[in-house]
Image (cartoon, rainbow, N blue to C red):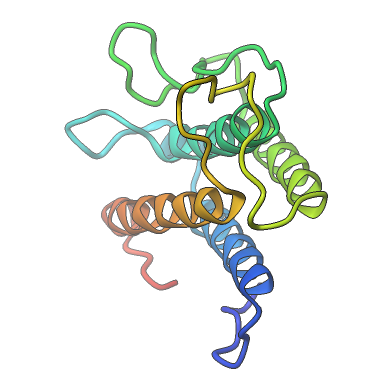
Length: 169
């Protein structure tokens, strides 16, 4: 289990990356122990599922770091969403293991991208950001993605408790 970063950590880069890994691990931990039926079932009016959230967060990493910051030419930017409803979506032929692998692969690619850049570097032109749009700095993107993880993990806490009563971090 990955621990929350210590309160003595003062290096901005180390702190942001440690929290990102902490939230990634928390996401996987919150999904562990759910049956495939529970991973695919929605308990909220909007219709998202825990497995759909995992796929969505893989695509958050994909869009913000690969397409956004690194300006990689990537396909399939929005296949985490149903084309009609825009709700996070996992196709019936996609297994939980496949979605987990997708998530871990996107996290690994993010780590590579971040390792080769400074926090003050701005997103390259050609991906999500094209002139004359503003190009956010890596530090801003990291913080934005962290807050997205924090928000979604809070949502997942409630859904997990509704599913089987499990609570905790």
